[in-house]
Length: 370
Image 1 (spheres, rainbow, N blue to C red):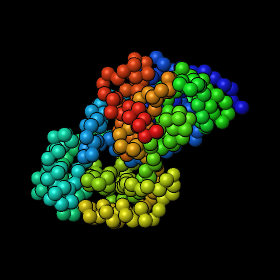
Image 2 (cartoon, rainbow, N blue to C red):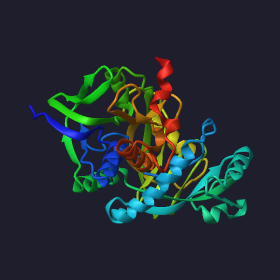
Image 3 (spheres, rainbow, N blue to C red):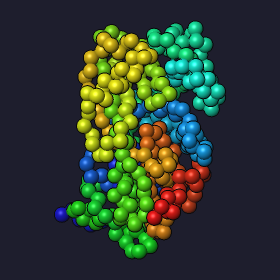
């Protein structure tokens, strides 16, 4: 039985969100404890393609909340990559991606939103030259500066840096919370208790378990995503492209090509399937013929946490003093991790976030569903 302990801040979840919160808390002089039941970056944080492209704006996001959070996080990724030697430690690689339109309606939609995407429209006659991946007819495209990282290495590097500033890691399975009717005072583990002045729940799709612990609605469900890793027989084109429906191709610094990704409502099933692989490859074949000669060397599946309204939950748990929630980032967990970590660290230590408005992400917005 591991000994009980007391910490200033206990963070349940060793994925990229929990680790980013620990990193920014440690920068502010707090010594947080990250609690992880399996292994750091076990879920989507370790299997993501690690693309730092904001992608297309959410047409159903009437709040306009995501773009400021995305912009702040992209800026932080550049800063942190300089601080932590991102190119050398987690393959931080700037590149230009192409957003491809399959038909005229999609092309018009893309071009109308070029400015908010910080992207440049590409004349149709220049697409093949500027986006060498695209050798099948497309109706239009945008060139968007972006970057990619190895998400597992990134999470590990963030944690390593946080630990150098006073953070720590404890392996243990959280089974509940400790406290009273209106406050939370720590985490009950399978092998002990961690009491804490502040407790953060950053458990990805497993955050739904915390709903019962808090007696609060946390409407987060798992969205399964599969990615295929391909080995080219000849050197592949640099960079990559994506369509308007979440499919992408990217050449990794390792020389492999990653293609993805599915969006499957499959509960907590994480098995890979031939059907998903075939669907990804056939969809992307409409844009490029270059995948046909490549050999499949790996296929992964992971679960992304998607909230009831598509926006993350970032903030204090309503009516539960000392408890905070950070989950529901969907397919954008890697890119949003740093802005989330910074904002929640500020909220915990200062009572407010200075860089982004967290109001649209307040977990209390789901209170009416009780």
